[in-house]
Image: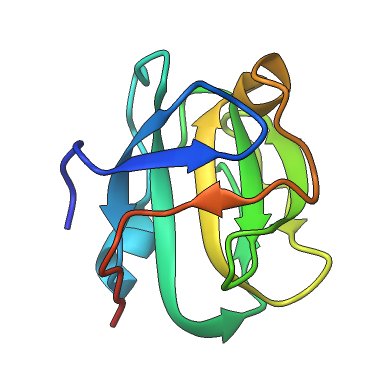
Amino acid sequence: MFGYSPVVTFASSSQALFIETADDPAERSTGLVNRTCLGDNSGMLFVYPNDVENTFWMKDTLVPLSIAWLKADGAILEIEDMQPRTEDQHSSPAPFRYAIEANQGWFTAHGISVGDVATLPPNLSAS
C-alpha cells in the first residue's frame, strides 16, 4: 500500500532509505509513474509473492532513477541507472523477490553495491 514510513537499511551504509511499498499488481504496475520529484532519501520497494523475472521501464516516469534488484534474503543482485521517459528494458540478471527504486545515483552515493544486503521492513507480503 502506498505511503512513506517503512525504512530499508543496508549493511554497508549508515543511510536509511524511506520507502513506499508497492505490493500488489496495480501498485507495482504504477510504480513512480508521473511523479515530478522524489525525496532525497526516499524510494519505492516493489514486493513480489515469489521470485520473478520482470522487466522495468521508464516510459511515463519523469525522474531519473536507479534500481536495485534483491534476492529474497535482501542481497543485491544488480544496480542499474534508468533514464526518464524511455522505453529501454531493465532486467535483473537472475530471478528476484524485491526491487528498490531511488533517485539516480543514490546507491552509489551511499556506498551500496552488488552483494550488499538490505534489511527490509518486517511483515512484507505481496499479492
